[in-house]
Length: 225
Image 1 (cartoon, rainbow, N blue to C red):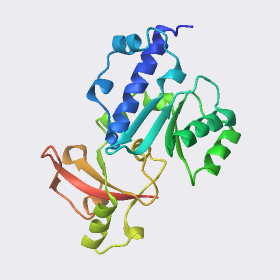
Image 2: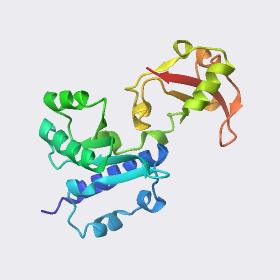
Image 3: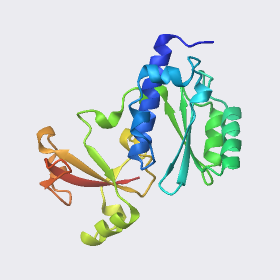
């Protein structure tokens, strides 16, 4: 059955944000996928758009670190059966990371299943409402740049500090979730002077540096905790 126009528009926006998020995480995403118009989105599915057919498969350069983005058909809370179904697909295709885009959330048993497999599979859950607008492009959200392990090590050595001495950002922070950051990762935050920062932020490690657009910024670092 064909979806209402409003629902098609909603899914088109959500899928666009997913592609932007994957590209920002370093996955290989074509500009044409991000810039796809609503009409192209409809034509690609021959006018029959179903959530289960919107699955995204991506990997990082060299076909490494594959990820799947699933869109369950069920609009109520997702149960453990759906999680197990996706785990079987991931196991078969040797994929260890996935994002599930849901309308409302997970049942308690599905959340328990997600936690049980955390050592083998990394499954992230986003509600559709979180992806209607890309938080990274909000004018009040400063630029976040996740550091590699080598960059993190160099930072700690440069300032002769240990991990517990770094200011923290919660793993539940919307931007940390957007980038898929794990505990212990470090993110560099560039706050333009025009937006203002607290005095404490101004004193964090570096200040008055320039970002990629040559705008004077206060530069701080946060470790995911």
